[in-house]
Length: 122
Image 1 (cartoon, rainbow, N blue to C red):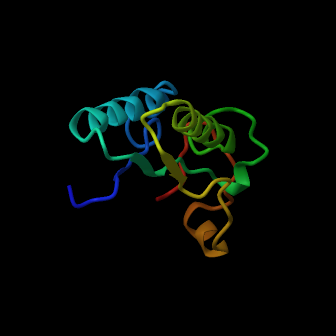
Image 2 (image 1 turned 135 degrees about the horizontal axis):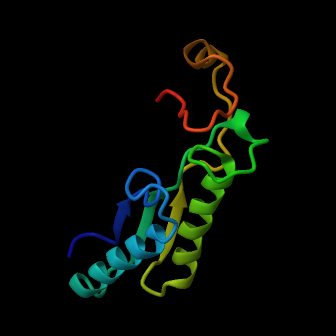
């Protein structure tokens, strides 16, 4: 009763249920409905969500994990459910269209070109 709102972080279709593009809708709808049932007077906010994307893979047009297309698909679905579900009052996206942060990272993975079945080091 002392809080202004209820907020959760989550990365459906990224960390959990990777590849399942229906996961954002299922996950956020379940959370929002649960909050509404338990705390009907409190707004629910998605406080952090999104997916990673490798800047150097921007020319890759597949939707393999770590590509910007897959990142876009997840973020679009997160935003869609937040905007269309009346039990969700807001959303904050983890940065979108990842930025290249450090050339030293290429010493760990070599040239960061996309190779099917290979994921970048985390």
